[in-house]
Image 1 (cartoon, rainbow, N blue to C red):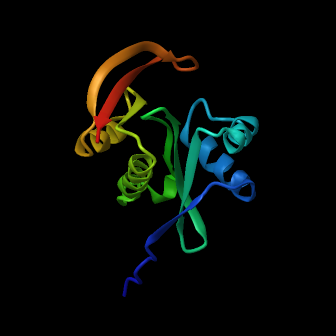
Image 2: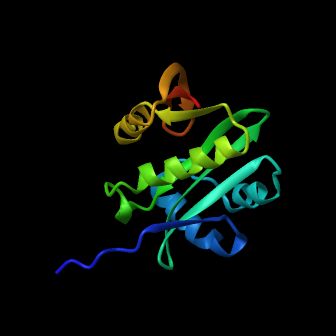
Amino acid sequence: MNEAKPALSFQRFTLEYLPNVLFIESESYPEPWTHGMFRQELTNQNSYIWLAMQGDSLIGYAGFWLVLDEAHITRITVAEKHRSMGHGRAITEHMLERAFELGAVLARLEVRETNVPARALYDRLGFVVEGKRIGYYQRTNENAVLMVKRF
């Protein structure tokens, strides 16, 4: 019999979760954020990062910078072993709700042109393509697709 997994809960990012976040970050991106970059997010007044928990386990995180009335999405990340289970959608929806509550009227993001699953998720959530940045990701020279969602 399959035992139901606990629902996701969300909490603000704190330093105690930094090692776990760095592990997920390193398995998820060719150009992962560093320890110092995440520490800076904790002191940036415009930065909001939420951790997605399933019971006591960190399974992902998402964040944005709120600049005036715009949420610039900085990260939406799900741990490798928890992908393709709908968690990315739940995490993104939670983050977008927080951005809206804080006064954002739109959200913007960049996504790797080759990241088909993420682009499909953003399409389903109402993001539209706004443009492209050629060679945006330096290490891989991949293009970034710019997407926007208006609330």
